[in-house]
Image (tube, rainbow, N blue to C red):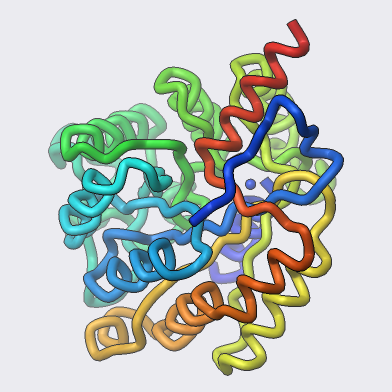
Length: 314
């Protein structure tokens, strides 16, 4: 099962104070842009604190919020008070931690296929693939979007927690259609190898054209680093990735946290999450990005770039 989940997430990775971008005067293919994106806001208090620190004191340019999670309201209040910053919804169909779990936003009787025997969302992506009805999933994801809007979150994009929403062709199509309906960009990367990803790759090729037609952007590359808990080695790995970025728009996915008792009780990844917070508030890293000539942008700016491209084509 772990191998299956990793393959799904590799599929997603293949699929996905900030300087303003004068999009009409630049072509993304001529330079390097990066969205530094913090996932999992709303998951816990320490994750919220770390994400806010990254956005206020560091170079984190965007974050996405897990609406079903217990600390959603705290981060939603921050987002509402900071509409100039960039916030998406981390669309969630699973609840992976052993003793810290959540259920759906929609009423449970309306989305029965989303629930395990304890009435929480399924533990892992493999179970989502096996059990979830796409109509139930759509009800739940709409409920998450509408709840975020109700709490005043200024939305810039949609993405997916652990890749669950892009784990089947029907779920992937539903996800893209929600983005078009709400006119919100979705996390989506240009090309997938059909030999590795089969039907998902075939469907993504079709949907890429649909997104472009509707003025919604498609990432050139998606980068994520799980690995090394040692801070120095983790920092060096991110610097190496930044130095090797290709022209176009890349998103770097990070998970910010504070390595305290709360986060340690939830997840074994607390030290790595703390490392991400430290890396992207590190003055040396911020200076390196500037020296490399990489422009840090938000999803709002990326969306504007895509809309300008459509206007030029017309």
